[in-house]
Image (tube, rainbow, N blue to C red; front, side, top):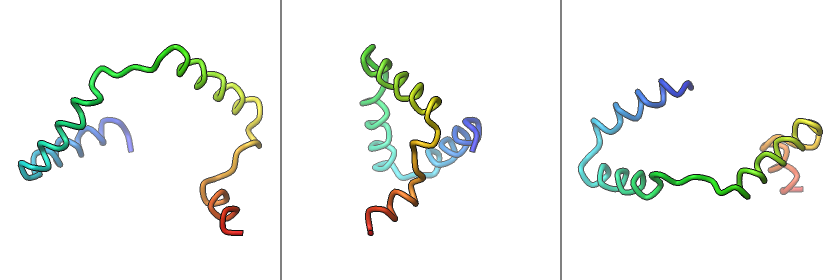
Length: 71
């Protein structure tokens, strides 16, 4: 789903929800407004992305991971 589709769907949802749900949704958005990653968080993400690009076979799918847990 594209960002445009997500925005459109959110707008439609917000226009339909009841007042209490709207208030909860608004509170959640305000809580996260303006949050940015710290320099160390950005560095960690960059390092992990670099590792993944160099080692694409080092990851497993979510379904494979769950299957391993149940063995």
